[in-house]
Picture 1 (cartoon, rainbow, N blue to C red):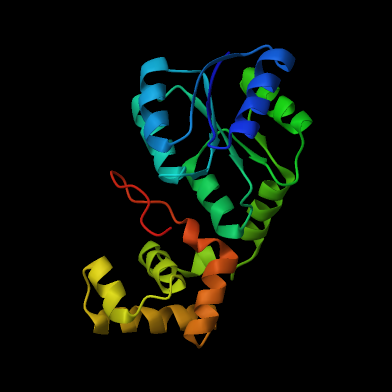
Picture 2 (picture 1 turned 30 degrees about the vertical axis):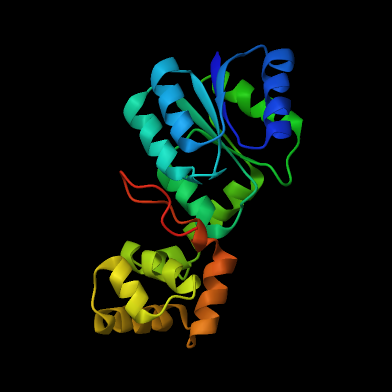
Amino acid sequence: MRVVIVEDHIMFREAIHKICEQECGVTVVGSATTGQEAAKLIGDARPDVVLLDLNLPDGDGFWVIERIKGASPKTKILVLSSHCDDYTLYRVARSEVQGFVDKSTQTAASLREALAALCRGQTYFSAAYLEAKENRRTDPLAFMKLLTDREFEMLALIGEGLTNAEIGRRMQLTPKTIETHRSNIMRKLDLHSTPKLIHFALESGLLQVPAKRGQQKVYC
């Protein structure tokens, strides 16, 4: 199995490289520290698997996932992330990758297990991911079931502390339209002040919202 590692922390990247080649018997054909580097490398190398950190210097890794699928659709993607908030895991599920490893709570043994699963043509998802997925399925009031994509986008900007006028300029909408959307978000989430919305956006991981297709990171 041919692997590309996308990770900006040198020590962690070297540790992953060692695990891959010395303990799992797979070949690392390249590594990248940014999404732009990763997109070019993966397009050229067409690896079997990409180990992808979601927190990259030039944007979150979700836009890189889109690039990988366009440039090398047969490449499998194993996400590595220290973010296990509800929204990040929701976005991982929607991105239809083949695995997720929690960098904060899982060990090198988990990475070995994940790589072995992908080698067998299977998937691998952490316990935190599976638990969050089940909670979303069973909870009719899960926030990702309550808000539209446009409202998610707006809530992320509210989380940055932007005013209605500033959000309107970003989204090319009038301040009055922004105020209407803000009121709808408050009603759906039962949060009736801007500080509560900001806190919710931060706690839920909405400031990790991916850029739209063809764009780099918008919010971070």
